[in-house]
Image (cartoon, rainbow, N blue to C red; front, side, top):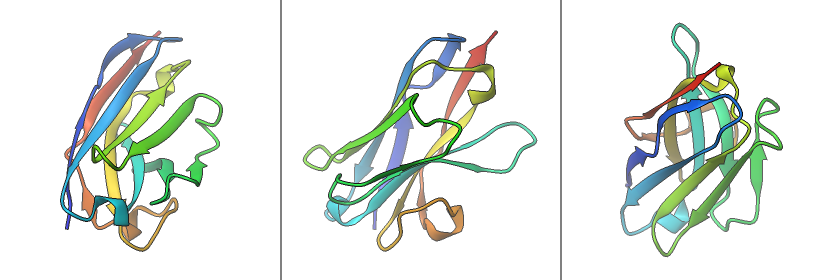
Length: 123
């Protein structure tokens, strides 16, 4: 049982940076693997990054490797996504997700989701 709230979205120019945050509520936050997904207008929801419960393992989509960094602070019940060298194709609503038993790219395996935060990257 966990509730998620994203923040930090906004409008930036190509090449700029944003840091997204996901605040979680629940006594067992450290028991969940966490992930970020995104969805552009007219497109399917796309995997971005995931992080294990221990913070020792991370997994990134090829499209964001080297530009994005996922991290978590279990003491503060937060997950972050540092986004650098942003491109117009990064424009999307970004969602935070949690799973007790799964860490990977399949959104069907994440039972808990936030409401999303909008990221717009201009040319």
